[in-house]
Image 1 (cartoon, rainbow, N blue to C red):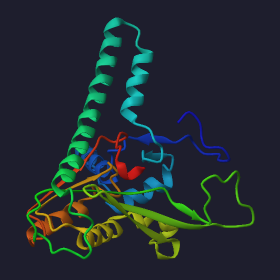
Image 2 (cartoon, rainbow, N blue to C red):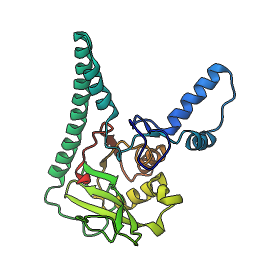
Image 3 (cartoon, rainbow, N blue to C red):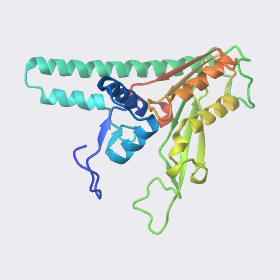
Length: 271
């Protein structure tokens, strides 16, 4: 960012690509230490020192609402001087946009396929046993929304003085075939870690997804799930291990886990 946030005397934030993770950065650090034949620190110490010494270097999140690739490509087009540079920059931007459109088309096709197969079945009145029906496709989308504050007014004109609103986390799980969306409200007294940051971690996400699939699933054999490209919440290795566990014990024959391009994850659940 060009300047530090107002009211702070620190450095301007520097955002890494949203597909970057701290684990990936630590592996790059380990590789550089091995090449230089120097001792490297462990992952937890690496994260702690990053937070203490370089707090202005952050990984871009959906809250920043910006695609780093788009921004760099647009900057390349604006800064290009020769015709070849302009064509190369414009071609890179076009390739990126086409890739995002392709991924979004896959998402829409998955929703359409699930709606066509489950059309007319209606909302399940009670939990259905896994792999107990002939449905081959069911599509679900899940994501964390922005935190809510209670009391909440959608057209509040200014801040509420002398009152500290109660913070509530909102996790949405959408059955795109019916369609219907289930919202989990997590009170600030039920969160984990300081400031509730742990509620977006793998423990909470896996618990919520497992409950939703158990209570609201159609007993399908093939499950397709879409999530945004947020490393801390969705594509964590523990969540991937949970999906593998479901197939190993026979809860699903196949699970397709898909994500759109970071910065362009447009899903119905975000509405």
